[in-house]
Each structure stands twice: as C-alpha cells, then as structure tokens.
Length: 263
Image 1 (cartoon, helix red, strand yellow):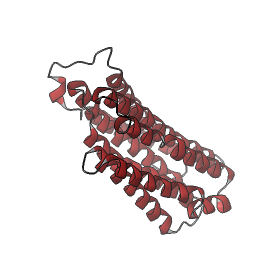
Image 2 (tube, rainbow, N blue to C red; image 1 turned 60 degrees about the horizontal axis):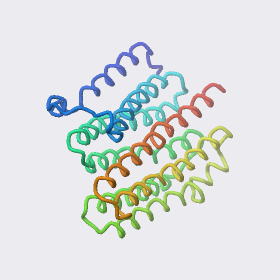
Image 3 (cartoon, rainbow, N blue to C red; image 1 turned 90 degrees about the vertical axis):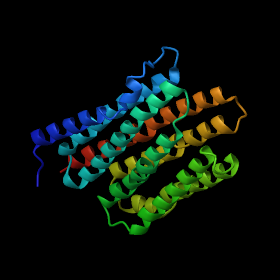
Image 4 (tube, helix red, strand yellow; image 1 turned 180 degrees about the horizontal axis):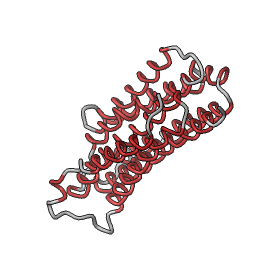
C-alpha cells in the first residue's frame, strides 16, 4: 500500500520537531552557555543539528524508493534520530560540566551500531535470500566490540584488556563483511549498484570505525592529562559519528534510489 506523501511528511516533521524538545531543560536554565573557545562543545552542537537534518531527509525520501528499500531508509532515519536525541543530552553534559558523557554515548551506540549492522543484512535481503546466521554473526561481533569498549571506558576493567576485546569484536565484523557469508552473497548475487554500496559500507566500517579505537587510544592509553584526553576523545568520537551514521545512511539512500529508478 502506498504511503500518502503529504500525511507522511506532516507526521515526520512533527516527530522530528518533538525530538528537538527532548533536550534537558535543566541545563538550558542553568545559565551555562556555549563558549566560542569550546571547540568540543561546538562540535556537539553542529553534529546534533546535522543528525536532525539527516533524519528528516531519510524519512522524507522513503516515498521515493521501491517498497523493498523502505525499511533500509527507515533504519537509516532511526539511526540518526536516536543519535540526535543522545547528542542533545551529551552536548548539555559537556557544556555544563566539561566531562565526557560516556554513559549517554554508549547507550546511543548500543542501539545505533547494531542498526547499522542490520543495514548490511537488509540491502542483501532486498536482492537475495540471506541466511539468518549472517544477521546473528554481525550482532555478536557488534556486542563484543561495544561491551569491551564500555567496560574499559567506564572503569570496570583495565583499559588495555577491554581495548583488546573490543578490537576482536571489530575484527570479527570485518571478517564477515570482507570474507564471510555476507561478502560471498554480495559478490555472487548482488547487482552492480548494490555491490558498490556494500563495498563502500564495509570501507566505512573499516576506516570510519577505526576512528573509534584511535579516539579510545588517544583518550586513555597515551598518558595525556585528563583535560587533554577528554577533548581529544570527544572530538574524535564526534567526527566519527558524522561519517559512520550520516554518510553510511547516504550510501543506503543512494543505492535505494538507483535500484528503484530502474523499475
């Protein structure tokens, strides 16, 4: 059944407008303001607005693509929507306290990173029959990576062992998308446009996701002072989220439009 564009547009814009009101009013009324010299705080604000804009774009573009691609665009919109809400809180924590919003960031990642992994499964499922094992292997690798990172950053485990566990989870994901079953299905059954998108997505998972361990290393393993560590960590993580959430979704959108317009 075709979605009414006018009705869907109104609902989408209303939902996004509601999200803008989720930012904690406690910080807004505390008298703390963003300083022009606070480059970390500025990066939080810029990226939170970029995530809102990306959410509107992905949801509004759903009506442009064929039915089998709508779920992929919906997931892309959910990733940026969830991230935007968390960025509203993270930017307030940073501006008000100057401390790293570790808990908010990992709550965001525990939802959005598995959704990004689902995108690999969804674009293949749109053009081929994909075994459920592909989905679950990607999920397991994702959870190992995230849990390893969190227990290290939150201080539950020494940073080096946690770093190694997180890296193992990431390597497991890379194996699946480069040499595992997902990669083989892409090479054997996907049309050229899907193969191109899949290849670009796995390059983002390789080089874009590499930014996170670099940030972890810079923040916790270089022996810098606490202030310098927090600034480096948050700027690196914030820039990584632009690539790994917004750009990742744009790739999905591009292949969805390309394949839909062939019909």
